[in-house]
Length: 449
Ligand code: CO
Image (tube, rainbow, N blue to C red; front, side, top):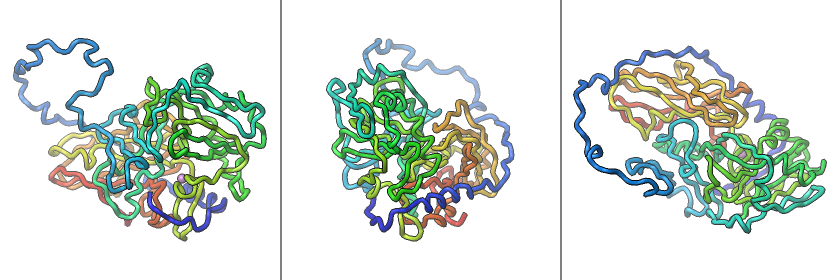
């Protein structure tokens, strides 16, 4: 998003260092099991008088198919994607944010899935669209959409997160909205063809240790994805997790949430690379090429590298580490008087399942373990809840997620100590919301923690 110079690409030592760092984020305090008692709500205490007959009881409503494709109620018109006008020069190479504050459960409706385009969204006719798979293969092939649909289906509930999610917070900008601090992440049921089946069809050669996908959009976006045996551009092996696990889940998707992909999300086909920075899930996919080294494309140098404290930049940090955020209360959803509430939020990890989420209402002095709401899937949004009896006093509400590898979401201080403040990507630190006595909720950064 902002200009920067790539002083020196980072090598495997930094990769090892990064791995070391993620292990060092240990869970410090022991969680205490939650269990507040739900008291009567204000509504529940109201007198149970007979309700007046509403006007809708006295009319005939709309007939079937008066709206052939159903839309949300007009009273939900505020639940929309939004962009930040000052963030990018135009809306073509830009981002829109998912209204996490208004969503329930773990699925993002297709029309609210965040967008990130590098050359704008395009409309592609599926009858003429083709996918070519070539490079280090025995038998290069061209597929129509119908060809792809004849393969066995593979599907999953996976989140997609732009690695720039939270980017504006690095330098102290405080967006007073969960939509803008965390809305570059969405979660969808994706359906398509397994990459493994396509690899079998074309006969990928042993020398292939990477592939890249390419989009049919104005940016012709290209991103390299590792395969077993992958080495970086300096010839050093990349991490085992990246090389040996990422590719197994990958699909070429043609459907999301039960219907065809939306145009702004890659119609008619896109890659889905579960757990990894979302730009690797190339939209409007037209080409997959198997190669023996990463491409080091424009999008892998100009963008999507991580500034470090010493002024150098890390490349190929592919996995979205564990992250979480409280979606109620949040700046977009204030409190309405003291009493019983349920704190709710979302957690996710690019390395597998969310194992636990702790919630604090006192700025991290004490933590309680939240309830994880079923279902809990790998590389998917996980909903967490915790009952809260609010005493009407100021509170600092935070969540801290841990994934099944034992990695714990870091504090902002830990991230800044590791990477300084010049970064844009992979900001997954604990978010704090300050609940004021008047019920307003604001974004605060506890940079000393
Ligand atoms: Co990265």
